[in-house]
Amino acid sequence: MLERLKNKNIIITGASGGIGAEMASLCAERGANLVLLARNLEKLNQQKTDLEARFQVKVDVHKLDVSNTDEIQAVFAKIVEQLGRVDVLVNNAGYGIFREAYEAKIDDVKGMFAVNVVGLMACTSMVLPIMQQQGSGHIINIASQAGKIATPKSSVYSATKHAVLGYTNSLRMEMAKHHVYVTAINPGPIETNFFTIADEKGTYVKNVKRFMLKPEYVAKKVVDAMLTPVREINLPRWMNAGSIVYALFPRLFERLGRKMFNQK
Image (cartoon, rainbow, N blue to C red; front, side):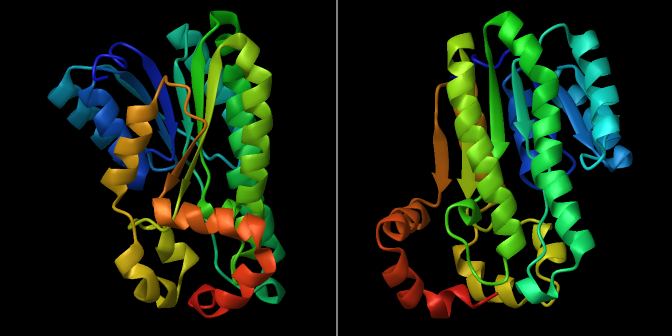
């Protein structure tokens, strides 16, 4: 398993912090060459210096705003030309804002869809031709349990992640004939700076802190699955069990879970 990623070319968006940075470190440790993308070029350059020194792998970094599709096309065209092949793309960039629907600002709605959905699709579209030509590759989309269970104050964020799951599931079937794997990662809340934007008041984090996943744990699950035909990774497992119950008994689930769902 540790040799599977050796000398492979792996692109990670949203790579400057959280699970993106953890995945980059694990991939480098396993001998992969990396292309790290994020808006914070200073942090990316620090990662590049650190990872190349520690693991003797090649790390390229590019400043990228995933909400800007023109920028995506320009940056990815350069990356694909330089690499010659792309083995794994991890669409990790994304953010959320927790507000009730009537409070949601239209600019925030557009922003979340631009990054979480359109940006993800645009990044993916840039590597699909080369993966089809290779007859191999792996698209990994970081979705969310929110894409399976919509809860109060996350209407827009949940909508973006429902969209990601729909896109991922369709893409998986389309790419099967090209031997390209497509995987959805559906984590619950993770201890990252995601909540500095999503949960301004800190109420949600306070209420669910004991359930929050460690970023290094999530990252390892993702990296372990790279270049394997895994359909989904759902974390934690008990939360995924809830999504199954929700699909079977939605009315009962919503009634019994109302108190917990309103902890945001």
